[in-house]
Image 1 (spheres, rainbow, N blue to C red):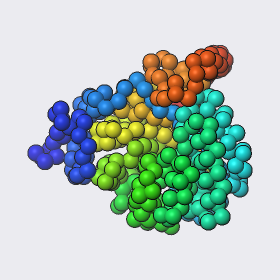
Image 2: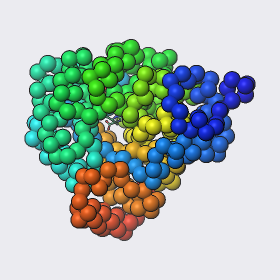
Image 3: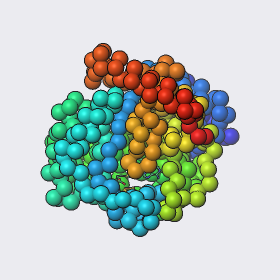
Image 4: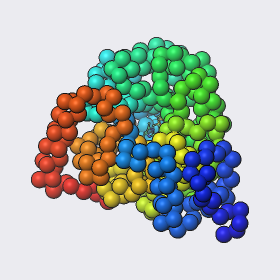
Length: 362
Ligand code: SAM
Ligand code: DTB
Ligand code: SF4
């Protein structure tokens, strides 16, 4: 390792927000011994967050399938036969009902996703009503609707949308191997529009799509060198869906996934790093390691957008076993509600242990 590439680790490095990361520096973080990387990530995490606190968001697919884009990982692209039933835009009240259920099971943020390249003018009234209704329940709101023009971003911000999710997915160099129907700079433009409208940015990517370590470094470099770091950085592990071009992608080394979380934590010290898609394929030990590496947010609830996620009761039990508490949980639920939710989830868990389903399939 040369002098430039050697990871710098001092007191200043723990809390400093930098926007000038080189690819070499980030790669040097990736390639250091696992134990050193984990120690560094933990140190940064503890200097910036309560290490035992995790934020929970629930996803809702408000418009499913039939997407014109060709994202090679995505079960919702109309170009691949994945057997997914397409659905029209949900009614506003139906979305609010789902949000109520998510709140009752302990989520503090409700993320609404649509399989669109971008919303049409006629969609905006519906989605802004959804934002207002969900916010009215006392939940944080997030949407992911594809590309946004600046006026659309402003409409969403005016409706009270807290976060907009728009992922870069991978490095600029690998992007063309994954998606051809829109460019990296299209994505960056939407992210600028979201920022300029005053919303918080949720932006991350996918690991396990056949990319190299330098592509993972390249994705994180793009995120960390933005004018402001995204407040939320979802790190998804590819969910391999039958019918998509990525269905037969080779398994990712789990340590490479954990390394990605750890490096994201180190170079974006104050962002929430979300352990996102792919948890259904991770055992509890791997998830615990992701929390140790600095992940402090998850998607909670048994479905992501179209694919399965661990049951909420399993997550609650894992949180209990690890001594993790939910961020802002107490802001959104009174003590009795919290207690009732915990008792219910523990009872559900006992049931699934009886059925010998304690560990997720590794
Ligand atoms: N259509 C909008 C867009 O692409 O911006 C929003 C919905 S899209 C499904 C949201 C994100 O989900 C994608 O950017 C991608 O990062 C993630 N995603 C989709 N399919 C996935 C899969 N099979 N495995 C992991 N992440 C996936
Ligand atoms: C993100 O980064 N991951 C979420 C959310 N943002 C919208 C979506 C994951 C989707 C996984 C595949 C599916 O369930 O369709
Ligand atoms: Fe469409 Fe989004 Fe899926 Fe791409 S990731 S195919 S844009 S729903």
